[in-house]
Length: 150
Image (cartoon, rainbow, N blue to C red):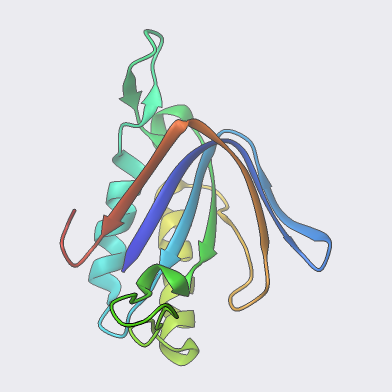
């Protein structure tokens, strides 16, 4: 499981000209899933997301976590995170999990994050053509892969 975390001042997701998610201060998380992913990957990533000290404290130093600042979250499924560009110029998405595997893991990631965060996590719609808008704060963008633990 691979995620791209972006610290945002605001973010939203629009599908068919309808805004389906909208947050202020918090995180926009792009989530890519492969067939080998399990609940163990989800649990590890959720702990990381909640406790990463990437929000500024009163001295403008990144010492606060999402929990500390009571930030909001949007999670967007992003199969292209597992694109292979090794051959040719057209990316291959063969590593990305297909919907029967990916959807339950995506839903479990969101549910686990909500439980641990203690509030609703907003989402896009799995497989939809989404328009994602964000104001990256910092900018702070972090990529984490549960397989390499980096």
